[in-house]
Amino acid sequence: MSRPIATRIYDLYGRCYSGFEWLFRKRLARALGAIAFREGDRALDIGVGTGISLEFYPPHVHVTGIDLSAGMLAAAKKKLATGEVRKGCREDATQLLQADALNLPFADKSFDVIFLSHVISTVPDPQRCLDEALRVAREQATIVLVNHFRSPWPVINWVETAIDPICRRLGWRTDLSVEHLLQSSGVEGAEKRRVGTGSMFRIVFLQKRRDGAGGTRVVEMPTPAKRKAELEIGRM
Ligand SMILES: C[S@@+](CC[C@H](N)C(=O)[O-])C[C@H]1O[C@@H](n2cnc3c(N)ncnc32)[C@H](O)[C@@H]1O
Image (cartoon, rainbow, N blue to C red):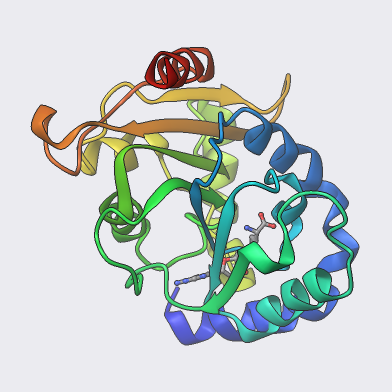
């Protein structure tokens, strides 16, 4: 899917997306709730959309949300300004910018947490999107993807392949393999969890390694418990 088409589709969705937000809220709450945020962490929300996720960040985190669609961003800005985001991130610690996930306007190693919900399957080049996320992630940053990925089950996989051309016209793809995506970015041992029993959606947790241990493209598996324990040791 080319960039202008995606942008036009999501500009349109920006007007009616609020009607579907309930479908995503629980999933986003669960994924963000599993992250061990530290005081003053800088988080980047790639493809922040209408800002459903904003209320699930703790108030002590600086959040930058980017999206290519002005329509989606306008809805997120309205949500923030009108106090609809009652809990979660603070308005004065949140920045919403129009930017391309495939060319992030940030220096290398700028963020402690990177969140990509329902976006990796909407961009024209998922690989580049993940590579950009890894580039702007600091050493030991947490990177979390929430998405539908191609099923390992042949029958479901057949359906996903069959409906993919239709879904692409609607703004997303259904044939993205998480294994292929992670492998091509040099990611090892990511932790993948189903959102719930029978759910087609997965939450993928990655942690960027220290540079000396393997360069910017290699990440290792953190369980949230392990990450929390590491952070606690770091504080001692
Ligand atoms: C399905 S929505 C998900 C929004 C939000 N993350 C959520 O979970 O509700 C996908 C979002 O990705 C954005 N998007 C698509 N391609 C993009 C790109 N190249 N750069 C930045 N955002 C992009 C769309 O504009 C849209 O807001």
